Length: 233
Ligand SMILES: Cc1cc2nc3c(=O)[nH]c(=O)nc-3n(C[C@H](O)[C@H](O)[C@H](O)COP(=O)(O)OP(=O)(O)OC[C@H]3O[C@@H](n4cnc5c(N)ncnc54)[C@H](O)[C@@H]3O)c2cc1C
Image (tube, rainbow, N blue to C red; front, side, top):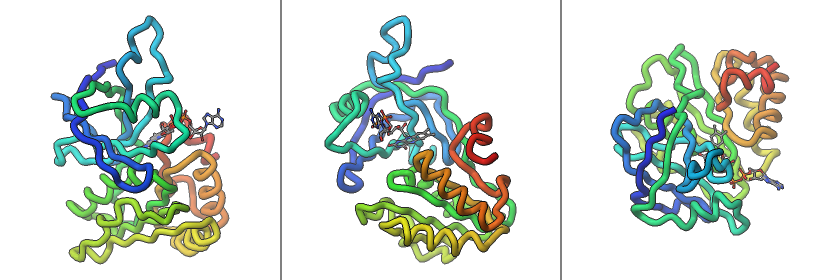
């Protein structure tokens, strides 16, 4: 397993308790849109056994062409040991990245794609949206539906461009509004549905899509192939 050590360049406030950590791009580190990585903090491998308390899965919210690795996460008042350490990082602090993999690349099969996310989960979709704006070949349209009770609309500027009317977005703040929208989108049985959020969010959204006859092949989740069946069988 190759471990890429790199440094924190900057931390940007995205919304209340939500920050993007920008990391220097280590030489040889590559990824595709929608990739997640393991973001490990200093000390994670200083003992014989890795300290899992200092490692979390994180989506890469940037594209390689941005020349930086962006990680968007929430830092609430109540923090895990990991988030306490993460919040203390300063420009120049070292972090490690490893096991980078994409489960949710854009599928180019002449269909609409609906991106369903909960809260900061929309960060996983940011690079897909940028990649779609770069090249929408063989994708009919892209629509993002995000539920966030805070009412703060993360990454909404992505959708403010007027160059491509086939890119649209909706932000809702409560579950009735979210499921009302999912019900409306699920009528489109030809489309691909991508879902990112907690496991409960995945299960509930998948159950709703199933009611409309959306098949497992049309549902994409950020889970490794071997765990997909836990959600889709
Ligand atoms: C593929 C993938 C991509 C991801 N991408 C991102 C990303 O881009 N940004 C991001 O912020 N997160 C992402 N995550 C989730 C991330 O790995 C962390 O789980 C998350 O950030 C919360 O970390 P934490 O240290 O605050 O909480 P964790 O310790 O990881 O706990 C996770 C959740 O479990 C619950 N929990 C934990 N312990 C307890 C307890 N004792 N009692 C009750 N509830 C508990 C809490 O609700 C908590 O939020 C991703 C996960 C996966 C699998």
